[in-house]
Length: 76
Image (cartoon, rainbow, N blue to C red; front, side):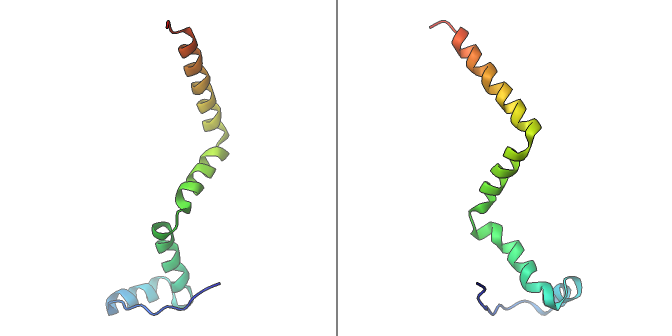
């Protein structure tokens, strides 16, 4: 669900936005810019992207296993 909101911008900023983005795309552009600053999803998305990186996950698993082995070999 979307909510309507009125904001005030400097005329030059509005004109640049209108010229660059276009009238029908301004709301989505602004929402995309603001979203990471007000939603806590950026960390979730980052972790999801890292988990989907198979090469990185494989390296991380190897590192964890090596660390566990080093700890097992350590004298107590």
